[in-house]
Length: 579
Image 1: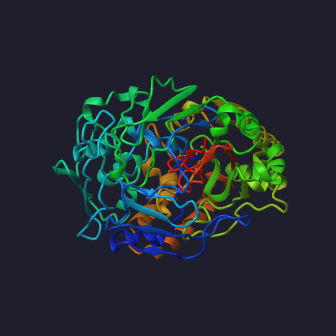
Image 2: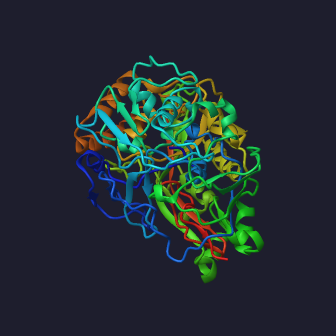
Image 3: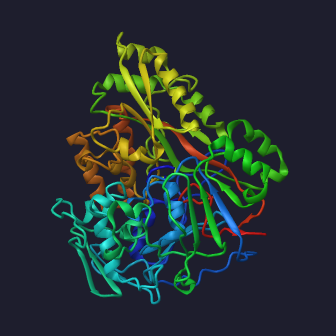
């Protein structure tokens, strides 16, 4: 999942528990802390559907008031089947429900995978090839229409067509591996059966023990066929969660959500509905967010930031007891990369030179220092089972090896186009990359792209970007959900690509296919670590920048919120206005 990136703080070993039953996997310690994330964490899988409804109240919470979200630019998508970036996922947690979902622990304990629209996390009698879901009673859309299995089947099918091309790729790959299904409005994909309005059966061609995790993706958000208005669904969407849109959404500056009176808390083990209203302001940059929330005046007393605290203000926040109480912080499981477009930068030595020339320490300092970033040299997050620590392109001080880069270039001065989102924050980051590469002789042109179309632009196979910043976190606890999604060339398509290095090596594709099909999860973890190093050493399609940390502030009248391990933002579904 892309960053601004969703990730699950879970071990790959937990996948087997999706079939085995409700259990807790506690291999290793919890992630977080100044020393960096741990290699594994824990998850509870509620196969039997014992999680209580309604969700237990947040201690001290009370209804009423208005909360605010501050962000530098609107999310690229709010159509649920298109959502694959953390900001949209966070907002979507208030708007949409899925077959399964996660309960987050404010104390940093294990995530809990539970039935959301479904009564449990799914049932399989054939080791994970066929999965059956039974829906809860009383689940409705915002207009009071009952949600049926057909609405969910259509949502999954829709995710496999043009209105899902920027969303998660798994159902398209897993239900239709030969790409025989062509989606059209109203059509249902092969393998999806709805014997009645309360039952959904998913039949995969192959075994998929990770299916309960896939069911938590926004691909399974129910969509009534009659309300599917194509591209217009980005702004004119239908809610199934505790909040709904009020008025129009301009997709640029603001969005207002109010309570959805047809959401029944008795059907939902995950969400709450405390605030009367959520106001989303998509105009303030990192500096403005920091100044406003530190000042803590008026409506900003009920605000949460999405940008990290401005670099120059971090020491002040750390040393001010009152401000420190309002921080949301942690070093998590997300990795920031520079993708190198291998269809444009075809010379391996040039890609290796980019890696050697990159000044990782300068980049981390520009991001905000160790409070928000730790150096990354591997492709997998340290939280993923199978993670292998290595550095294929080392330097003595972390500022790059310019001499080695020049040696690889052999006197060449390649011209490169660096693409970043056009915000004041990313403009600063882009200059750091440009300066680092030009030390070695590269000629770098900056192309700052519209943030609301950034991933659409770099995910277009015809993009003219040579280097592109992006972030990623695993969608579920298996190395394939990073390595195969980002570097298996078989999945490259015309638009909506996650493999934005466009690496397509048949030999590597076969190894990644084998990783996907490996039934022994311990062996798959080992394979993942080995493939990680092989990809960087033999192909150099990316520059791992840093493991992403979070250092946010919220207003003094925001209660119940904490760092979401799923979205790397403030948790919104437990938040309330203290008054």
